[in-house]
Length: 228
Image (cartoon, rainbow, N blue to C red; front, side, top):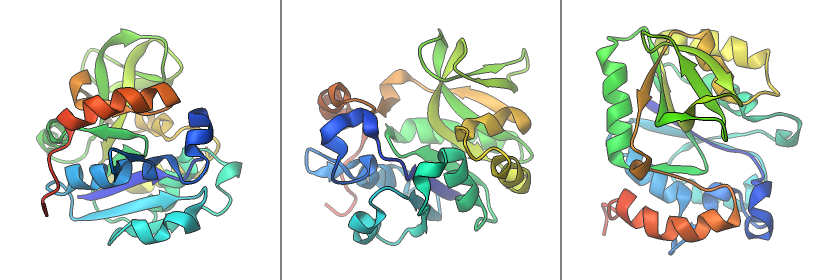
């Protein structure tokens, strides 16, 4: 499995906190979000691609062994274009993770297991349990297949999913025709199952107030670095 971390955006909702580096490279308690993500993904993927855009040159040396895709004109698109460019170089199942989301290993394992149970041929998208209408959300039918995505009442999109290898070409084509959209619009176009993950396994950082909350939540989410 090949992970894709989407980190091209400016993260403007963070305000001055995010002026110097892309949001995933902000440090919280001495470690970047990106470092924490890579640590969580290590046991589940063979390779990682990170998509950069805003101030990419500042963090080029911080991505480690990951493959890097740079969207130079990142401000002209939304993250559908970021994912499209990443998928163009992938011939494998793609585990997609938003750059401003850190999840526990348990959440990744649950998502990957759901994908494995499909025996290939279906993609999977993770969401938080319970319907809401404050954030972007997915809806599904009675069989658990995604039917819609957007600012709708539904399950809050968790910024985590798996695009099955058999869907990569179709996803790339659809994203290429919808480059100014948020990438989860592709899930209803594929045969995609919903899996819910615990909100206690999920941290999303959008605004300055999220940084303070994350300092406490991340301690419980992410295990110590394997090299320590």
